[in-house]
Image (cartoon, rainbow, N blue to C red; front, top):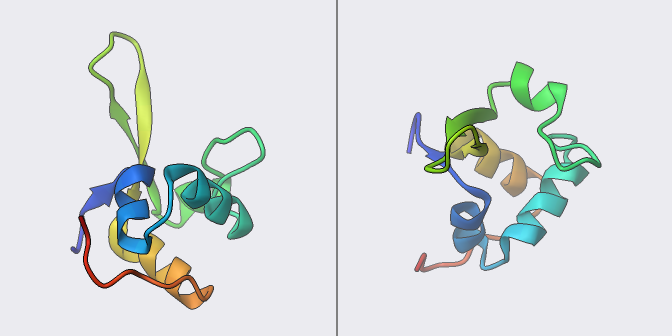
Length: 84
């Protein structure tokens, strides 16, 4: 999983929760701000990257899987056994 980036939806599959719940966890950890944008901490810590969308002039954020999941695990979030 090293170097792999996942969307909030993809991260949610590892924990059995929605992308919205992942978003709230990112806020709890200081990796996302109230405006739903990645925080300075997320950028400086290498947790997040911007990717182009299929729609012109738009983008979305993806999260570095290993770092983000480690932060979730350390915060007591429980992974599900099987990822769908």
